[in-house]
Image (cartoon, rainbow, N blue to C red; front, side):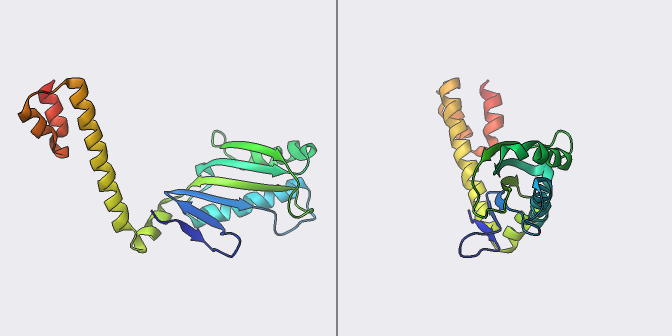
Length: 180
């Protein structure tokens, strides 16, 4: 499967998407003189823009790693964080105290999110849909073979006619019903 890199540069890409999962990192960009609340608001606003760009939104964030320079700022950062998420949609998260690359940064966040349908449509437009379909067929066949082997083991099918019937993935379910 192809890896999608959105706005790739020499050191990083704005967003990297693989297998429907997006990864991106945000730091405050517009006002580094802001306090922790202001910088957190900047980071979350930038995250929302990146999520929209991949056809997703903040309800589809799977996890966030928060890098903060001072745990004394954690309650204020949490205030902005809690207000940003709708009840019941907060992702898993870790919060780590660090020294960041720019001494003016108070917070940095690494996001993992489910990409939306727009990203899949872009992949199909880039002619990756054919490979994806082939991959799906391959996965289905492997899954069918595994199911067949499991069924042979558990049902102890000894009749050759039943075995031939089960080799067809389309008739697999009806075959199992007959053998039970």
